[in-house]
Image 1 (spheres, rainbow, N blue to C red):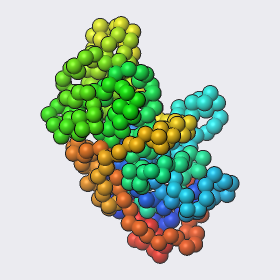
Image 2 (image 1 turned 90 degrees about the vertical axis):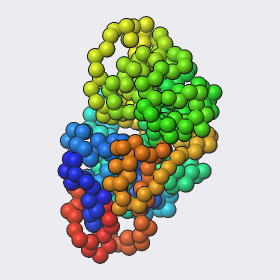
Image 3 (image 1 turned 180 degrees about the vertical axis):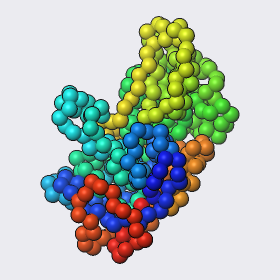
Image 4 (image 1 turned 30 degrees about the horizontal axis):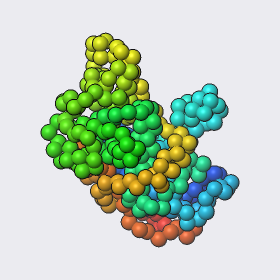
Amino acid sequence: MRVHAAGSPLLADQLPVREPGALQILVRVLACGVCRTDLHVADGELPAVPYPIVPGHEIIGRVERLGSGVSRFRIGDRVGVPWLGETCGVCGYCRRGLENLCERARFTGYTLDGGYAEYAVADARYCCIVPSRYSDVQAAPLLCAGLIGYRAYRAAGEGSLGLYGFGAAAHLLAQIALAEGRTVFAFTRPGDDAAQQFARELGVTWAGGSDEAPSEPLDAAIVFAAVGALVPVALAAVRKRGRVVCAGIHMSDIPSFPYRLLWGERSICSVANLTRADAAEFMQVAAAVPLEPSVETFPLDQANLALKRLREGHLQGAAVLVPPQVPAPTQPQVPPSTAPPAPSRGPPGAARA
């Protein structure tokens, strides 16, 4: 399922199966989570999207082929393909261990074709092992809602925690925070009683609308909703030295606010992308803490419906696309290439995207 132009619905295209290049793997997609970033890609809210593009960066797949130089995985392994797809390794950020800020990074489902497809090619060095305790569908949201959410969680520091936007990421992080004995407050769209009840069932101390004040000041808050107006709201809710973390890749403009909300050594920061070290650390946490991802599955060809449900806030937890189970390709179809292949009407050996 590909986006051909900003603001247009995804179309079902037939594409040849690519061969993995050096250090790459070909995976058969078993499940792919649906993330709000996919909406930003489809809506043209991110810069320089190379349309047409296959969205999806929460990929759980089975290794079908190995490119030259791949030694970390074997054919048949189950792997996760996350948002961070490639980095240059030589820019100042990479040399300082900040590959999430790489000047020439490429991202799965944004500048690289992603997982809204039956097959995907990925750089093996950026893939990760997913704990076996999770099914394919349960594991998919761990690849972004979990990974980047966990980076935001660490940035927030210790103490009581407010989560603004109680969706795929927040419902996973709430479980981690509660397992660590932290007090958690859930903020939803005003009037979203179902989401608030869902948060209470997970064990949060308080749940209410984002237009409400929590029952006590927070030590930190994470804003997952792409709504800039929530930043001063969250600032008003945290105590002195409290921190507000903006966890999304895109957010509407933050309105001006009085300095008194920031005073008292409060701070605002953003979280950008993730590193491979983040992935390894989070997967260890996910292996130790029995997370219960709440998921709603959709067939691959219903990707537009899944995105619509996400846009309208009608999901509890995460949406996950499940491709049809197709026969493995029996021979090379397309030589390694960084250029997206042209769509066709489905030649022999083609797969749907």
